[in-house]
Image (cartoon, rainbow, N blue to C red; front, side):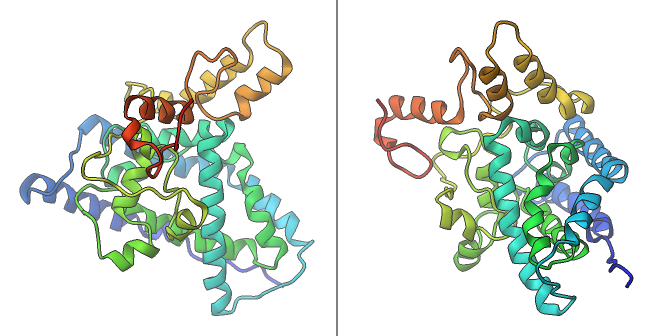
Length: 312
């Protein structure tokens, strides 16, 4: 039996990406919509997107081969019915939430994801600032349970393409808060601005891909506040437009830390798997530390969404 093959949604969406970026640029410059573009920053994002496509062509076989190997051990074969695609999309969106949360809490995965957050601007070009090293983190293992349940790897890849295309339009400041019922269920520009922000209350929040319900269910949802508008980038901005440095800077820093002299084996491993900002001597700060510092300075904010209730 021939294996199913579907068109690549993300490639078909490229013309839409270009047109949407041009419309946003016009809206910002001539229609007084909120947002800004920086030429070098935008070019870096476009180069990162191009590199991501190239990396997928070179290394995509890693995940495909692994998932097809798992397919032989499937418990069921759900086929290609329309409802299979709907359920696969929902399950894969939950899988993306899990991946995204891990990517912010485990430095090994953060090393490939951090480049997406490295821009200090927030516009549609930022959505294209994607990783070149995603295949080597091994996070495709999160798709294996779906394969074992009977969703063909080609079906999973197909629905994930729609998830990625959906996430493109939420990378903008030109769209404010939307219709409340829509924002209760779906990820929106407002929700995703929070995710890209470095304000202490917004760190490690709103991991959703398409459905914001996962963040609401698992306690990671934080609403965008007018009195605390998002500041974009990463906690320690890298200050470069060089795509090679953007792509690999955290891998280099992480490996340097793990190979530092006079560390125990446990400390070396923690530099790979502990949250970003962890250090063996406490000289750096994790997102939890930054939130605690903020509450110490602003005790009236304690217990609000995204912040601890009390700090010792």
